[in-house]
Image (cartoon, rainbow, N blue to C red):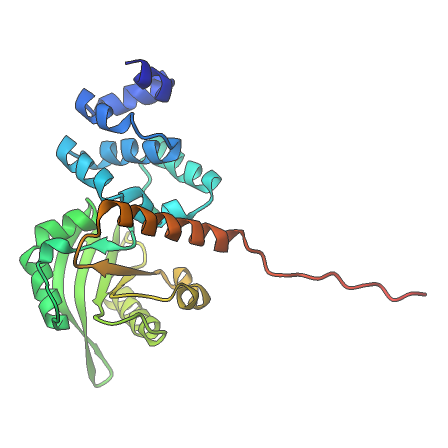
Length: 270
C-alpha cells in the first residue's frame, strides 16, 4: 500500500483507473519502476479493459517497448499518455508495435506466404490479441481492380477507436523499398473505393521477416500512413528479448535526437 501511494499520488487519476482496474491489476503495475511505462500499462489496461491475465501477458511480452510510442522522446510520450487519460484518444503510435510476436502460429522451418496467412486466419483470435483491442477482421485477399489488373491485399482490418481501415501486407523476406509503393497503391484505392463517410484515411502495415532501419527512415513511411514491423514466429528468451528491445528503443531515440547539419554562412568581409 505504501508503494501504491508512492507511484499513484494523484487521487483523481486513481479514481479514474479504479473504474476498470482491480487491486490485482494494481499489484502487477506498481512494481514497474519507469513512470511512463507504468502509466502506459495502467491507461491501456483501463481503456482496453484487460483481465489481470492479459495484463501480465502484455508486461511479460514487453508491449511498451514494442510500441512506436516508446521510441519517442519522453515529453512526447507524456503528451500522448495525457491525451489518452483525459480524452481516451488513441493514436497509431499507441497501437502499432514492432516486432509482433506470432509464436502461437506454430510455424517451423520453411513456410510459404500463403501458410503464414492461413495460420493467422486459423489463429485469428490470438492474432487480434497480439494486434491489440479494437481491431476487427474484414477480409482476406481483398481484390482491387485497377485499370485491367487485379491486385490482392493479404488482410484487411478496421480499427474502431481510430475509425480507420488497416491494410496488412505479409512478406516472408526483408522489407524492400518497392513494398512502399505497393502499399501506397492499396491505401489510395481503399481511400477512393472503400472508405466510409466519417472515417479517417486508411493505414497500412507491412509485416515482414526483417527490415533495415535506415531504409525505413529514408523512405519517410509515416507520411504515407505506413508502418513497417518485423514478426517473430518464435519468442526469444526473456533476457535476450529485453536486450534486443532495449537496443531498438535507444537506437530509435538516438535517430530522433540527430539534427541535420546546418552550417552558417560567413558574411563576406567589407
